[in-house]
Image (cartoon, rainbow, N blue to C red; front, top):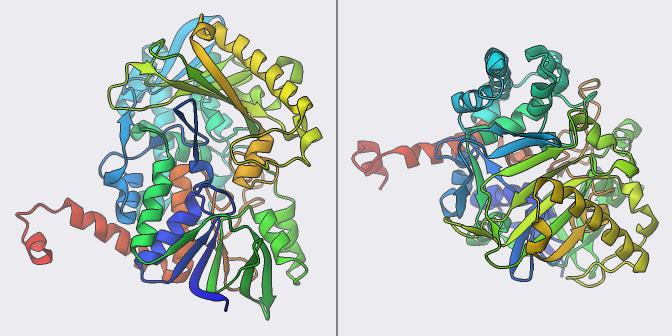
Length: 522
């Protein structure tokens, strides 16, 4: 007999797991279905030669006690169980360029951020300060960034239509500083003529507040959330690919999985790519404008990632990330690269395996890659869990790109090759198959300041009991997806009620054992 639940969540990315955790904590009978052999979406890790690599979570911001992501994670029951390593306070991110020996730092703490960067641009101190102030101002205009349920967010064209490139240019005329302030835009696949300033601010300001690496990978976030779901009576199943929706009279009655199982629920939440969610709805009549809105949404750029395993005790551990570019123009031009000039820029991040790392065991390097570069192999699929063999042509392609990337890395890190034990690669096809994005897009749909609502998706769909969550809904990133999941849950629970529970959990934690209220509660 088909199983029935209060809530069925399709997909175990961060958005799906946060939604499932919230509803399980609220006493709902919850089921999470994941198509792959590993939970977590972009939280997934993998191991090569005993080295743990992250697929998407290279570092996290806002996890100092009392900061916004900490407060959300505390309510979810995982904040104090994460194994974290704080990154370099005076330069957790460094922006660098060919033919420039300077390493321009992003420091933790607002005043420190301004002070450290001003050492390289003393005459631009006020401009740097103004830029940081604008980031904070924009962040404060989003109520859930401040965990405030009382303020109602208004779709303000002055905020949503403001481009990050325009804000940077308004704060300084110095070409190098402009490039440095935009230099971490790989975090959101920045586009000079499109990306809204709020996307930059919500991403970068969180790291400036505090920046952390997950010891032994971000997969622990998924494991801890799944533990919470199960603790509260929920179920989480893998190898459960959803292949069919049963829609009747405007309601999703049941879903079917590839193995022939059927699941009924009162409400469903899709953490699957919205375009694939539409495919599952099938021929059921939905307003054409809504369908076109999703179908025509622009996907963000995909990635080529190189995973390097080092020989033991050969490469010093660097407690910071590098965003490196060939020149100032490449900071924005990197996304529109010519194949002959690839890569125009890249990001380097090392794995943290303990609190006091002296040596690195691995390094991840990622840069942009268009889906059309791997389109020749798009009909291939991974058939073995731990391999990605798509034919000799694909293997040659990966080897050629690896060699090009290593040549570029040698310019920044001379002698790197002699420390390498092995290398592994992921391409847009990898992201497509494991993350479920249509063309392997890293960050969901493109946000366009020229058309602020064009790619915006509300959590509610045109199927009354089907909701959406994930990075294509509202915001991307760990904090953004967490907030988006809270908004999805608020559609059923009520925003004031849910935010009240989240804030109450954090208020209780802040009490001391001498507080009369604490004594009454315990």
